[in-house]
Figure 1 (cartoon, rainbow, N blue to C red):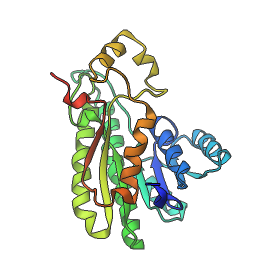
Figure 2: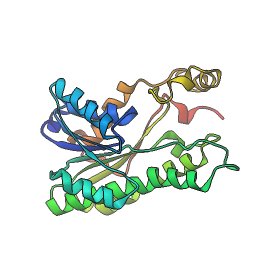
Figure 3: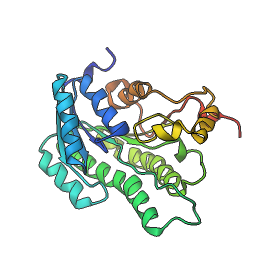
Figure 4: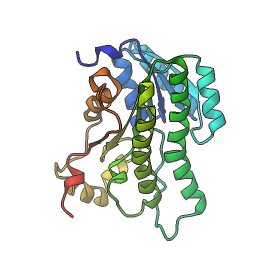
Length: 251
């Protein structure tokens, strides 16, 4: 199997209490990875850990606020384990008109989506360098980091910065055996956006996707596993879009 080398590895997944983070944790756990779920909602993390353990996987959780470097540092210390993989997934949208967005909303989006990614990547890379074992960091960006849409100026700016940050970190950390890549999902249905995609506006958006459908969460599995495993050992600084052709759709 292409992902056999993942068995016995340890991965930290941020934003793991719901949505893509929850899904990614399950994907890695099924490959034999001990997954450490991180988020602020400890009750949700406990439930997800219980589900993974019940299915025969290995899981634990740590409380973490990615916008707070102290919280991030304490989480790594409290975990007391070597991380081979970090999936930087925590993020928020902050939708609204650029003319009307409050400074507090802008700060919350940028702090979570950009500063949070950097804080976790930095803390993880320092530990990997200290342990002299290298590893893989996968930053979850978005196709909106590569192309824009209305009403999400802060989100698109933050995700574009994550793409550029991933390339900068890949350049600096390659010497330590640390690979850094950006995974850019298109539109996938989760519990957070299901209601929108059933609306008239959501259906109109789906029609603009060349494949005329939303992505299925399992269609992110192989791209994630490629970037986490030795199958992608020569891939670093890459931006991988999984979007049904949305980025190449006509204007």
